[in-house]
Length: 192
Image 1 (cartoon, rainbow, N blue to C red):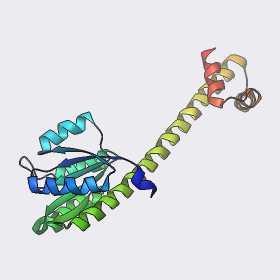
Image 2 (image 1 turned 180 degrees about the vertical axis):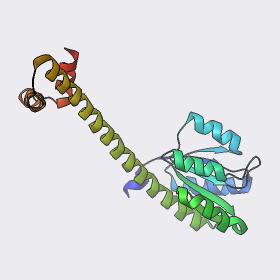
Image 3 (image 1 turned 120 degrees about the vertical axis):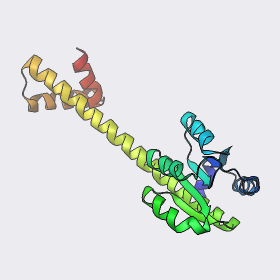
Image 4 (image 1 turned 90 degrees about the vertical axis):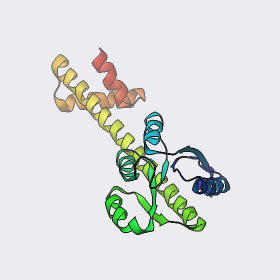
């Protein structure tokens, strides 16, 4: 399976040693994760300021916070999948809080099979987010190219007295004749 050959960086935020041990065992069995562990929200935030993670798993409550705000912040601001484990009596309320932000939520105690299934969901989410990010970057690159070409057209219009259509045609023809991208031609015109 192609997904299993990928590696995912995971930050586990949990202060419960038994849970951490069981989760470490499950993750080791899956074999496609690089994991870090933090025992509180404060230390997790410090770690997250230094490094991006594909997956953040929060086992709430934590000694210094309930972890809900961290889950929402991570899911909203970054391209990462977040799983929040909460006590079953608080599950409906917390689910309603975090669902609009795309945070996966499971009631505790989850079975090993359910946590494994949740990791499948998290991997799928990571792949979707990476695909969206790649599209976003290519769209930004395309917009930057359009802005650059437009600047070059204005240079041609002001310095050589061309019309916009003539400037556009000139840039396209130069790119085709020289087998180079329009971006390169535009940059050369601006640099002249």
